[in-house]
Length: 316
Length: 257
Image (tube, rainbow over all chains, first blue to last red):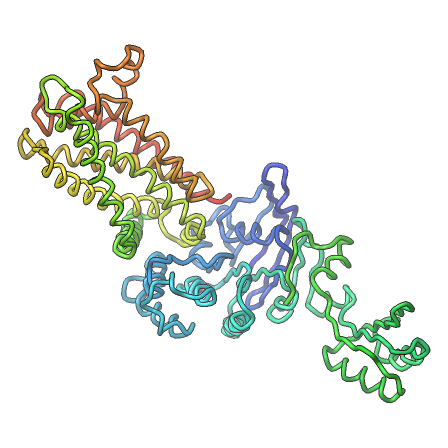
């Protein structure tokens, strides 16, 4: 549904994109994961006809973004990084305006606006100017605006950046619902966890290049996956602990003699943590501290690129 | 993109901006107060200090105040476009299958309506301090239309500024800073003959001078209405509008890239 080949874009000497290939089959979500400045937004802007690439080509539902931009705009929805709503209009007026600009006709635009306000839990605030909306409400309205014309392909650029955890989970539910309804979606995010929760396939982008692509599980396996870290009260217990956990580990456990810390790579999420506790219990080993850890974006980066993500990325 | 979409999309955008006028009362208040203050200030401060042979000074400079206030439309338009760009609305509009000229035309039409309102308020304030139309009804209407068209042309300059800078503050400054020199370097507030000789050469060809002369003819019957200054003004307005609208649409098409 979305195909990009060799997209490149430079701003003066800065390389924003350096030969990006992407494919999103119909009815699936691709998560484009990377830190600030990696080129995610540039890629989205090219695919949504807002920006011309220096090199490369891209099609959306078979329409070339450079040669048939008008046809592409008819079938896409875009929700950008900033909630692009008119703050002096009400929520209803915003959606109505977008509907009319999609040429739905006054009556359909009005009906569609009401329907979306209901769906996005904004009916009560529908006739207030959006200046009075919370950040989460504005984001929901912005997403609703991108859905006005029931687009076949949806682009969401960091849909949850800046939202509080509760609003973020609400946004996840909405996005999952869209996909159940059969939307094709390209989503950018700085959060590994978000890509993991929503996307069928994840492409990791760094310095304008896709450096890894695969399902969440494939990537995690590649990066080192989840692990349990335990700190033992007594150094003499270390070999016993290692022996007890070898059967659960997906790689050789790592031992730090100074801190008495044993790091065991596992898979299976927090269930693995329960298994570790059971094995330790059976072996009679007492842990002073025990933690389950997933790879953070920084670790993914470190592992894949050998350098840390350049911008501070907040993990939640 | 068909012409009918260009029109209907522009109407949608015009409605958006006209709603803004009622939603931001403080903006409306200041855009009404500013011209009133200008008229009172200039007439009270300068009326008796400057003498122009053959015409009451209030009447002499009134057209110039009108022209100056209309020229200030540039800053408002520039700030508006910069704000839309900063908030991501330009991106949103550009991702929609709407006419590429509608975001510009829609705003400029709404601003023409607002400028017309401003102009009538100024004329009302002018009447309080002694301004009178003396050239007949039709020339007066012609002068008002000329002023609204002049504001439209300057708004189209604001389009290019607003889409070209990154912040609202920069847009406001860039839309404002040259307006005072442009409007004062004319025959609007002092007669041309009182200016240094080298400056007269510049001032003679200023669009503001053409406007001042045209309006004096239309409002006071100083010379015939449809004469060289009027035609020059129309040419300036058409030229500025065409050039800057074309530049503006071009900038809009590649905004943010």
